[in-house]
Image (cartoon, rainbow, N blue to C red; front, top):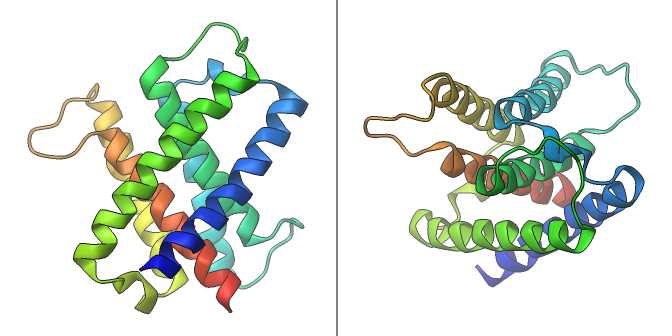
Length: 179
């Protein structure tokens, strides 16, 4: 499991680098997004991955890795927005954004470690396409919870679903890199 922890950290660091680069290019424009918009953005990424997996043809020159990285980053942004709420302006210090990114990435890492222990690394025997489907399922669950104004009866909230999306996307990226 130490190997998985190291691979997870490597993937998250790659996602983090892109997050920081985009922060420098665009600022924190994402601060104005409500979580429902972030969920829809993650949906677009996952649908594109699934479309490529089914059609085996893509007409946009962006690889699947970049879409999974986008899922990780948008889901971490959604966790940040869940904590802070959407803003009317995109003004946000880069250092604060990075600190919150790291905080939520570390929470996801700790969750992955606990689940990976209990599930005994079952993800290693899964297909990448299954991660895509699981992410889509988590998106639909999240959308339903959002439509219910965050109210659930027995289910986990949206934050737990975002964390699972992150972990599934990281597993997919690990498996893609291994191939």
